[in-house]
Image (tube, rainbow, N blue to C red; front, side):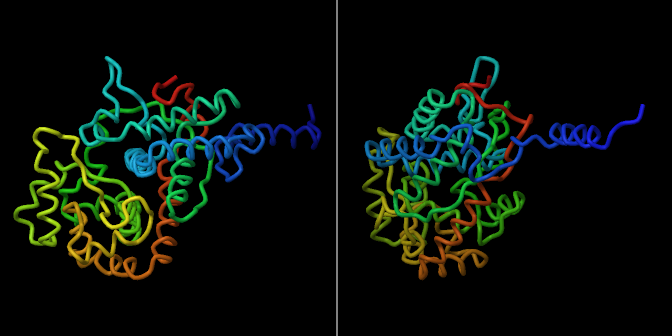
Length: 320
């Protein structure tokens, strides 16, 4: 039987919508119709949490990095382990991730579920909240595409080799980021996130007595600050001792003065591949902000799951 052109056109349109579902495409206004209150709820949750717990911004940025660099920005870091599965958050490098960051996502998810049930992914919540917090503490605003789905898999065994450790040589950290498509400059810009937050004494204490890269007075102060570490493993020091709660370029300026906290901080300054960018960012905060914003936009869509490759979790800590 002959088919009218109009009928054929409708069939083709229907078929194309199956092959290229609209929800698989990211956009800046992804929730404008399905959840118009998305931006407002994220901003209110972020503001309230940061005011009551000022370490939330740094903790959330770190949580975002640890999520994205392992299999992509898919909220797999938020999943809790079960008797049958050891999840990403229980890998040893993730055990020190701060509770405030997890709590922030939980609060935002709860509010969004009340306003727009089964609509907003945990991955989008984490991405948008991270951007808002960076901006709130003085960092650059950058655009965040929305429409990610939450991954259905989270395994601690996937983590090792995907996250940089402070004890790694800079060449290995460069290679790790290069394997994910990030240039040396992008890696250095992203490292500027250390302008806020703190590190536990266990991450650097063993280097304080024999590493000549430290400013001597700074090393002595750190030794005193971490003296009780064996009795109190929670002891920590700000990554940027000059302006610890402000997102700025002082972190990079510190490195040239021997005021880097971690071995990887010193590596950034001493490696010939990364040193030129450190010096540029130390002199030019606008350049750092511009490059950081661009690198974060790129990181925020790394390895994302869309369409049927993921789901909208009912709870961020459990796969549906």
